[in-house]
Length: 331
Image 1 (cartoon, rainbow, N blue to C red):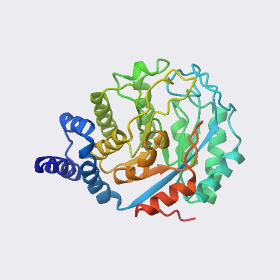
Image 2 (image 1 turned 45 degrees about the vertical axis):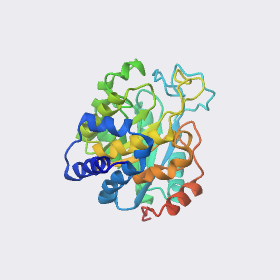
Image 3 (image 1 turned 90 degrees about the horizontal axis):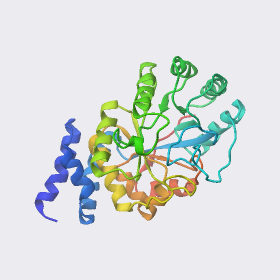
């Protein structure tokens, strides 16, 4: 590696630290860099990560409170109407079951409890179940509550805010010009609108992507720019876990070194935001999962919606072994 390359990656870190947006060409250079450049790229990304988050790692836990029965045709999702994946299906869990999940989140040292439901958007009854559960959880635990319930109707974001919801997740998933290749039953703009609605309601926006759905490098950089413009506070980076029975079941597993470059890219473009290594990390990053912490500052612990995650104790040990520290939850 020559001196110019060292300066180049450090220049990206310097831009990120001063709030300057890196160019498309610089973003593409990160994704297309040789594997010999991986460690210098991660070092530069870590400079930015450490500046904003020190060595703290935020933990998040998902509870799938409604599984399957979704009318949308998202090609990556095992719960969609076009999926034949053999998953467990059930309607909305009751309030007590949702509250019980919060206890497990605390046991896992998660600071954020993510209540996720399949479907285009919540019915009034489903929203009411979540509303009552969140109010009870907030009275018992010092947890940040994130809900992910799909496209919201008028007034629903305000009701979630009233219940005590801190954050709402609605991923853009992919770039605007690739979205139609992944989903046809709703639009990219529908997703942007929901994120903007929760911001108006005073709820912290969470929006991210799924990498590995056939997007180009240019589209991935453009998506990172879009999330920067959307000003999402938390950006979950999922790496496609191609589930048998879904339209994307034949997509190839990603190179783990490329996944690390993707995380560095998002750190450079969205430097002060929570970058979370999310679904598919175990499959795609494999033995390099620990290195993701040099760019990312957040993880999901435990299982995902319909796929298994790594053992929670293994994640805790991985964080400790890397010299990082779990962000404490005060209860």
